[in-house]
Image (cartoon, rainbow, N blue to C red):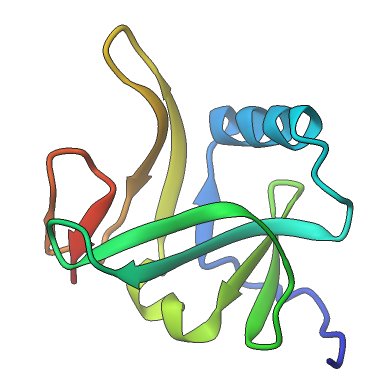
Length: 117
């Protein structure tokens, strides 16, 4: 697989809170240095699509981005669903975890992890 350079335009954003939690998870889970944050979508969920978020190796179809010091891998085809999305970290009494603010979503489920575009 040919190496590609980091793409300058960032399709998503990560809040400071999300970056802190991602770096904490990378350290706690001893994520290998060649891994990045995979952001994507898959069919399913109560609204049609579900978000993918996890640490993974780079794959052939991936575009590579540097977002707030985090290497992000995303398939180019997923960009139409995720362009402009903000990933945040919520720390509350009843909710704790990553949240997705997606301007492309025409409908979202109550849990915030699936959407329709």
